[in-house]
Image 1 (cartoon, one colour):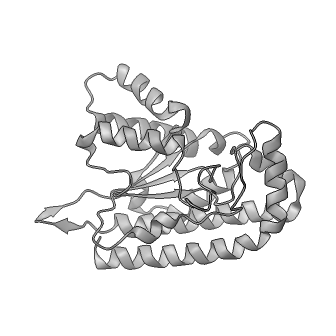
Image 2: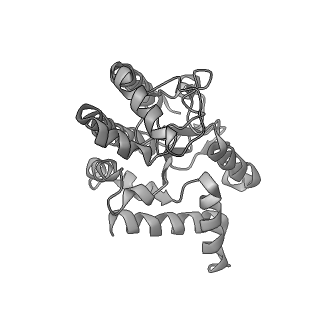
Image 3: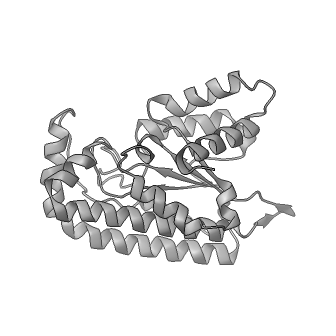
Length: 258
């Protein structure tokens, strides 16, 4: 990253850490609701962290070449374990790692060149459990809303900063940093993440960085790869990079409109 990029990233990281500390004051209310929601359809698991900061952000240095920001849904069972407190470290994360490892032509190492964020840092075993939390307590519903709005605004601003400068290493200018919004089921209809969707779009406005925002199916249950494969079956002449761009734009138009 350039000095300017890293300064922007560090400011985002520190603000995010502070917000999670603030939101964690609701842990006493959250944890019983999180346990109750999980009991309906999830095997018992140790609930250790109610609101999760991604500690992987602390490992990023100015020397890292950040090629991509990936936005998942919210931290699940593996992410909330105290020994982890990192995003996309469960099965979905393993699938994402495998995708980039199998496609080295993309030039992206998932744990090195990617900033991983969520639409909210509030944990639930399954994303749709957030609805149970919202219905159970008005204060928690407001927390989930506020966290979505904060994450959307600050993530968009971070992406604009990273996308506005190209890094130069060994005489080679890197490509623009892209943002992948994965898991779009809850971004449409009456989805949980409509506030995130709308705040994200509003923050970009007419900024050029919006051109490098793409939307995909989630990595979970291999939906990302299945969707990509089906798209490529109908576009046999496209390279992988071209197919990813066109698929991501198609889904972006579905979610945000043209």
